Length: 271
Image (cartoon, rainbow, N blue to C red; front, side, top):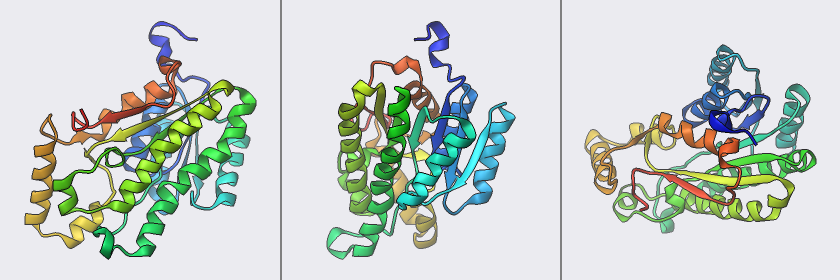
């Protein structure tokens, strides 16, 4: 185990980050590269954004690899893993970040296809990526899997749910938290750690943003922002850069005795 400030050093490590085109994914890629990791990143739609992220990684002196991947497709996911190992040599860190949202609706009015769509990416996708990477990590007897959930998977928020009901998203993220714990227990003796970051409301993410901008009037958007400020003890949204330290911590030797944990970055909401 590395000591001193070197416990955060990721030199010689290879990270695979799903959904690396923008937002949280881009921040995670950049943070891991800043601390020395080579990074394979995936996209499903935004190739331009993925190439921009790859350029950021290269400018930090690290190798990057861009792969188009729908994390809901097991064959595509297996190709993603095989390509990363073939080109970069291993997978030491997996960040299951890829996620979507769908049109908000109360449960009785929610379209079944919207429910299935969100669960297929946000939960099934995490399962498929984890399932494909585990044999690589088991063989090398090391690995850190970092799942990205949400505080919406920990508890419900009445005031916000009245404005933006997202049962599909909340259920998927609760499933990610449970899957994190189960995977951690099953593979801890193989040298694999599995932990979860549960962000609160952070600026700069893309989930629901386009839908809100198109469908909501300014008054509705302000009501939503005011509600977030009221329920957050720190009285503000987080910045996505404030998640950098968590992903490096969980990827590195600094968290070598931590597995099966959920770390909320939420300004105190879940306290």
